[in-house]
Image 1 (cartoon, rainbow, N blue to C red):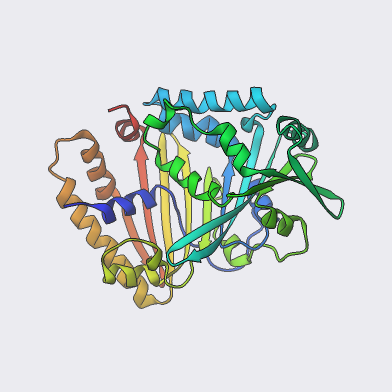
Image 2 (image 1 turned 90 degrees about the horizontal axis):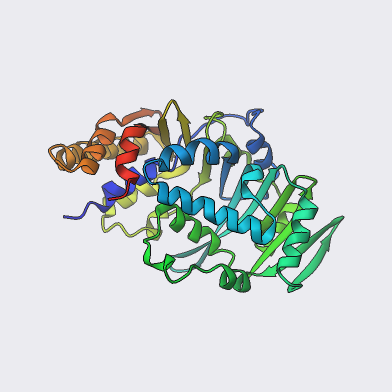
Length: 349
């Protein structure tokens, strides 16, 4: 028997948090300030880059120094080739618009605002030099958009033969789905003195033009965990289950009732805390979702509870300690995973 659905839910819990309601709060989070500048988006991700590189990644990858070394090598290589050190960005906000291409194929069109200890115009000047002049420009107001060939950039940075042997991580696959939206061209512009914008040309035009800003309903979803390293909020389309291979109509109906998702990752005292909250169409839908998650928790205990495998014992502890609650039409799932368990999951097997 394959446990794809249960595994997907556990992975989801490591990536998302909780839905908030009410008016947009005046959050002091710099990342949320960036998010308010984004154009209309179906989903928004905010990152505290300083804490990501200095706290979260060292905690999560400490048992796999090879993986951490590879990340730092890539960052060092990028800096030596372009003059850009991504570790100097302090806050990042990503706005993603989902576009149905055909049938079940969805393209995610991103626009990214990154702010930090950089000279944005200097950074763009370096990018122009590295491209060897192979770019076009557009002028919108006082800003110039530089458009580069995504195909040429991908060709220059595609993995070496040895790298292809390594299985892609969940993070890499997630990044691939976003980068896939940059299939033809990548646009870059200076938003202000210390902030750059990058994305598809259409999304960057929306960002610096007069297009509507990201909806308050999405921004609301970012305010629940102000101390989080990462926050995500998304408004889901109707019939989301048709884009996921489930093989279970009942579960599909449950997923289709979810309209808002919000998530966050927090690290403190060598513990990674992740929460998920889903807001459904109505209270009955939330009750059904709560019952479904509780059922998976019971099933998970039965599957992993008596295992002698260290990683499956971790799964058992995570599932056992998962806190599942319901409040009206919102369902919350909260997890806290200590470093000792994270080490078992990410350590070299």
